[in-house]
Image (tube, rainbow, N blue to C red):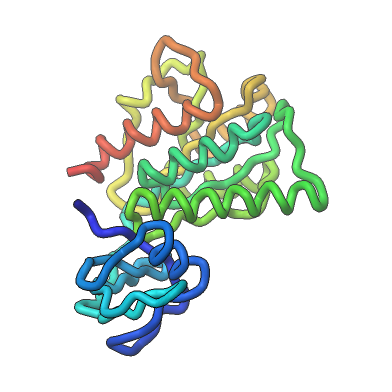
Length: 242
């Protein structure tokens, strides 16, 4: 079984340290790790420590570091622009995208998005997305936690598309995702629309930025699952699951 993963930033430089705070409490009280058991501690940016439990404390663990290494970021990177869904479907999308290996999620205020992120409500929603990504990374043993950017406008999404291989999911697209050309390096930016779909004006803006409309298949998926399905297909095509 893969050792459990805990996140700590910054990582200590010493060969022995105490994992305390929320992570240490969870390791000691919830997962009930014992002396001699293995675990990994990462900073969420690629550096990871392979450790053994040397001592169990009340709400913490004393760890011995066996190895320290850094995992490189995947290339090309997979970025998903996720239109704001209604309810808690945004957190569901972030959770599944993280488990499948997304490198970055960009929340998008599409014109047909029902949900709106404004002021304090928007800040709280963004924080929930980020906490969801962090927890999903730990659950899936990912030492690289995907970044969740600030809320983007359509113009800002177009700017991202100009510097990447841009793919816009659309049910009426002529080209299937399975046949879209993919780069050997750089970024693939996948745009997922809201429940009401991407407007013609938004499609025109994205096309002008160099993005191509692609379709997954005959079924019309929810906004919270379309990006997940597309990400899985891209991961296979880019040999990220070999």
